[in-house]
Image 1 (tube, helix red, strand yellow):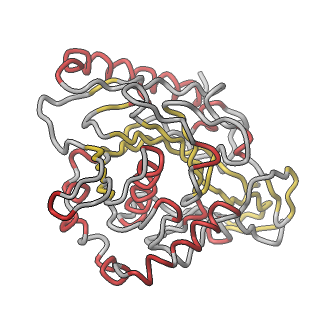
Image 2: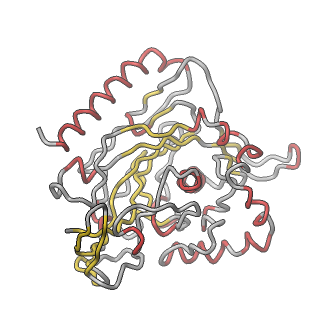
Image 3: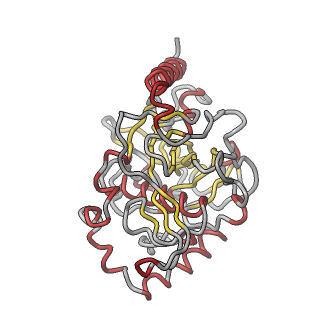
Length: 340
């Protein structure tokens, strides 16, 4: 039995366990909607590209790409010295639920894995003048899955660049107090106070344009482009203009949070050729987000948009009342790797 098949069987076993555990609790809370991600029909496989060797794109794409090492030859010492070829590609590495309903897992078929108590109820509220609030607000939860799809499908056997892991639920924000409270969140983003001013936020307009036309601006790390401010690193969105915009902001913040907590690492550029490296300030250019729930985006230039890109070209009309309010995203990660 191959390693990829063992990983897939392990994922199926985990899913069956979760379904059995969640069945008696399904009726105890709000309805959770979603479906399992079909790796054939729900994945934008053209998002793998461009594929590069050194600075040369051997499989081009209409989607923008990050800078790749110029030389096609690379050398590593991990632990033994080796010489290889520098390749660059995009890999589907993580999966994310983004939902307002605690313990709701859209990407697991819309099940609720409720522990018997509610915690961190989310919401999406419209404009109100109560207490001086005059704009829509939202609160989202995120579930982060390890999802090394290329390794499971064994597209290239024993390819050293693929993350060799099994399906797993790596993080649930319902049990994270830093995700629930803005004050506690300052423990991991104390610098947020520096950018809480009109001038810093006005600069995010440039990041919005850059992320939509080409790639987001990594120097403006406090910006999430057209979605708003990257701070605070939690799911409390003070200016929500719809499910897609605010859910993409929540998953962008969560990805940054994972980097700040050293639970996600850098994989792009020359530093990533031989191994992953610490990236406490996330480079936004490393990621693309593809919607897989409720309606997958599987074609077109904006099917897997960069962080901060406008949601109007790809995702307009893809969230709808009742059955289409629980979101799921496939996280594509740029990988530069030294291949034997």
